[in-house]
Structures are given as C-alpha cells and as structure tokens.
Image: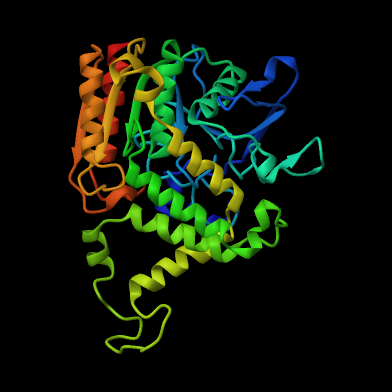
Length: 388
C-alpha cells in the first residue's frame, strides 16, 4: 500500500491489504443436493479471512453478506488509497467490533453469487458457457450448506459467532437451525424469519424490470451486453426500499438538480431522482442480471415458519445465544418481524437479547455509521467471551 494511504487514520485501523482466496469443492463428497431437487457440482467458493485463527480454533466469526455484496468485507485490494474498503470495514479490523486482534473473521461470496462463487454468471463446466438460466434454483439453506463446507475446509469445528444483515441475517438464522452444534453466538441484523408479501412484491417488480428488457434475451445475453436498462431499474426499485422517508427528506428534500429551477423535462430533475439513476448505472457495472433474479427468488422462498411448522419449532434444537438487532425506520423488514422472532426464541427457551435501534437511515442502517449498532455488537461479543 502506498505511504500516503498508510498515513490515513482510517487505513491504520483497517486490516490493510487483503486478497480473495478460492477453494473448489469437487468429487463424490461434494455433490450439493439442493432443496429444489437438483444437484450441483463442482462448486467454487470465493472467500476472505482477516485476523488469525487461535490455536484452539475457537475465535472464528463468520460474516454473511447481503443481497449484492461479496466476500470483500474489509480492508483494501489495491495499492490505490482511493479504493473503497470492504463493505463492512466499519465493523471489521483492529479495535473494531469484529476485532481482528481477537477474532478470525471469515466472509465468503455465497452460493449463486457473481463475485467468484459458482452462480449463474460462472462457467458451466459441462458446456463451457455461463450457466445463465440453466443454473438450478437454490435457497438460503443451500447457501449455508456450502458455507459449512468452507468452515470445515478451514479446520473449524465450532464458530464463535455468525453475523449478518438483511439476507445475511437470514443466513445467520439458518445456521442456528441447520447446524446448532456449530454456533455459539448468532447475530441476525435488520432481517426477518420469513419474507413478507410486500417484500416479495418489490422483488417481483425488480425481476420483471430485468426480464422485460429486450437485451435480457431469456437469460442468454453476453457478459458484456447485459440488460442494462432493466438491471438499473431493478436496482433503483430495490434501493428505494433500503432508505426511509426521513432519510430521503434529510438527504434530498425536494431539491432540484439545478438549484431552485425546474427543468420541465422527463428524467432526472430532482436530486433524489439523480441519486437513484446513479445507483442504477453504477450497479450495472458490478453485478449480473441473472444472478439478481436468482438471489431475490432465494430470499422470497425463505420462510422458517413454513419449513418447520412454527418459529418455536424451527429453533428448538438451537444451542447458541442470540442478539437480534432491528432499526426503527426499516420498513422493508420492520421491527414487528424482529419482535416476532425474539418472542419465538423466548418461547423456545433460548438465550436472546434484542435491540431496536432508533435510526432514520432505513433498512440500510446496518451498513452505515451513526447508530448504536457497533457498541451493541461489541457488548454482546464481550459477554459471549466471558461466558466461555
């Protein structure tokens, strides 16, 4: 890293230079039996690790990422100090809540992603072309199975904690259900135990935006000729759900791009419109359209109550301590859903703490500074360490 970057206080508290590793799971022992009834093999997993695994291998924290993130959760990939750090750098690093002087932090691009792990945009070894819509449907439960392969590969028998927000929080809950003996602490943040009809509706509109783009071509587009208009619109739709009315008022109000002048035109005239167009255009540069279709469908299908009869039954075998975090202005996954989850965990006799954080940042609050999330996480992990 350049000397100028090292002088930056934010970089000093960073994990520094990191790289993305890959492991290929293949052979008879690694044929993934998907919930859809299909099988998938081989499977490549992209992942990053930060900090050092203790001799007892008892300090591993698995970070589960949300919809459009990836394995690069912290640190820097390039010598250019202008490069943005990993997507959860505010939490991961020396002296931060996920303190890399204490914990061995793992983050992998989940199954079906488009950042190095096997997914619709990756090459199908049977054809030599991208899977596209030939990729089988998968679920959050399937994602977690592959994450367990990675944890096993790293020689870890039990995770100190599993943490994640939004879709990442769904994975946390599934870990506690699928592999109860492997998790000491579970931290589901800004998430839900089942998708609401409203959230499913937004996902469907986003998918239709992609599939209605002529360049989508039934998923047969070339990698360099994405359905840009449809994918950009899908991102704009999704991004509205990540914000809140208060945060939009604070950031944009009704301000025009050109001061107080009305442009008398269609297209971006208000600052909030310009912001959404920017989010859409930059998203197209880093994400794959077919992948977006599959991931949102996996979210739609997530429903622990339907899978296990009741939420109480779903967590009946879980052995970990839980910290559930929600945000007051999150209308995508409202606090009512978190309260329902906490109630079910209590009825199942589980050790659970709950914090509903007052914030006007909306659903995206778990990715942003300026709220109490960091101190709440630190307190929970410290207590978990003391409990032994």
